Length: 464
Image (cartoon, rainbow, N blue to C red; front, side):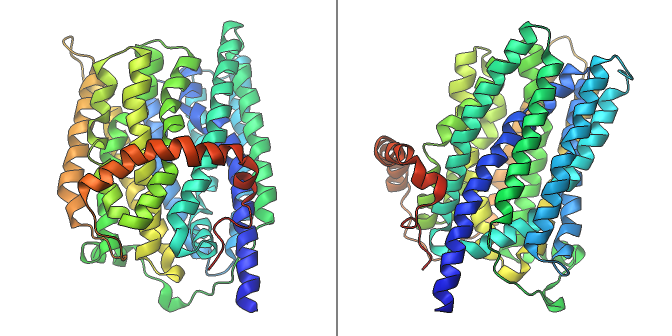
């Protein structure tokens, strides 16, 4: 009886989590995706834009260390609720930067001021991450984790894609009427309201009790020392090195599209999020594939293309090409990789240690991102050559280092979950022909039955 009651509460929590995720997309679509464009609009240099990514990439994971320790004293729900509330109100000072720019006040200092406020925002946004990650792991059954998270990502992707395209059209309208900064102010306020709604639905979620013991704690130093001796540690090293390689060029994609190629905000947004739209049709396939064949097989298939994505950005400047090739390939690969990375952590780390493990995992990735973005900022500042655009050189360097990370570190990672025998030809057939079939049947049916998706119909993914 007690187990049945808890299963029902977990079901309700998953439903509330999907509803909360919908409103998370308001922040991502109206703020997160416009951090670099806003920085460009207020006159930030290319190096400053790279530093915004570098600082946020390090501050976030560093903050998660303290966030994981808070779980020893407070419930996970309390940690998440307080952090989300404070985070939402930090969007208001960021709007102040836009108002100052409009008034011509401290214009030379505003990029630095934006970096300061944004850094504080990143800190508050990352404090609850270990608690939330641990919380979600306890309300989702192991047997359908890949499918459920792919479902949540799919819903968020549909919402984010719709909102992002709409926001891009609006911003172009504001730009044509010389109201670009006013547009950003409106966007940040919408993100603020969306985050408050996320807070509302988080309050409705049930939290299974968890009691951490002192013996469950292991320090960051211990984790680093023993990283090469265990599967999760080796995976963390791989992600940190890959994060370093990716961060060298990824913050500069916005600079390349907006400044070098001179695209409008709408075309820029359409290019960046075309891959997101395409990836929505394979998210469920990636989820089922990882549940069936394991997460490592997903890593193998996705990292085959991830290293060449920076090169694809610079081969052709046609917007249609940029949508269909680098953006779409990036979206398809990263959606599968990121989904399986989260599930891999759940498989390899015990429930009561996940809060600490995810904070250390993200910290090492954050260090990699900080160093990579910092290197990108230095390269863009010091590479001076009339023969080739410095951005192109940086994209090539990033591609080479991605390939190194994949070839050197990925083979050291093993699958620990029992999975079906893997056949490359059958699996590729499953991901191609099967994906088309599912896209035309299951996905369309799911989109029509949007109520079941949004509210997690009781017949869907019942707790076993």
